[in-house]
Amino acid sequence: MDLRKLDIFREVAEHGSFSRAAEQLHMAQPAVSIAVRKLEEELGLTLIDRGGRQACLTAEGAALLPQAIAILQQVAALQQASGELRGLLRGELAIACPSMLATCYLPDLLGGFLSRHPQLRTAVTQAGTDNIGQWLLADQIELGVISTTDAMEQDQLELLPLVNEQIVLCMAHDHPWAGRSAIPIAELHGAPMVVYESGYFIRNRLNQLCAAHGVTPDLRLQSNFLPLLIRMVKRGMGTTIGLAMLAEQEPGLVAVPLEEKSFISMALAKRRNRVISRANQAFWDWATLQL
Image (cartoon, rainbow, N blue to C red; front, side):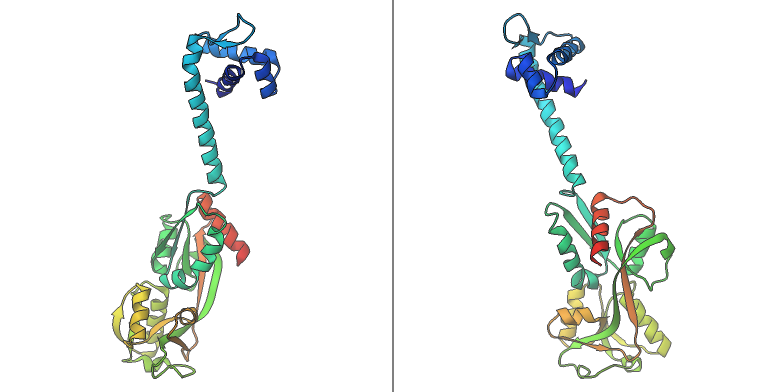
């Protein structure tokens, strides 16, 4: 059924006149009359009584008018909803991100975007970069933050660089090492530490540095829950490996560089030549302009 014919029928019924309906619809009166006639033929019913000076509804026309109005309203609502989705007023932005960047970096980047789209929902999954890279390559997620120093098939990914920071030791402000300018890797041997579980970019790099120097720290706690690690560091349980941004944003923590400088580069990634959701693509495009 042609929805345009329903709309014309509604206008004729509302104005009680073919000519007034034609004026409202910016159509010629004969075209309005033909449209209503074709609708009647399609339904096998007479909807308009044309015998008087006004175009009056027949009993059948009066019975069908509310249904016609309801159909037109539903179509208008569908068009509005699809328009809102195209305009990113609704939908979901989904990102996978390591916990340190999710805590220290992502809020500012996300906040700027979401303030422009207040009806957009956001889901942030915290995971290690090893897992995030695998999920991206397996098309299990569309956007994720990875370490560009990790060994993976990055030629299949499109990367948007986010940060490039030196790895540091984060410790309580009263830790014996807090006033030093740098810490040799060798001094980590037997030193108490609280660290991320394996699979996180920062833990992988710690393992590499320690293995290269034959060093074995005393790992008191392993967790991917960043607030727990921070709390344990502040309580003096040990140092943790991290980025300077963590100490900068967390009162009571001090960052001291490792003597052997090591940097971590992080990037927002998506599969190359993949069509992703409108919300995720819009965030990617927006972030590209900000960075």
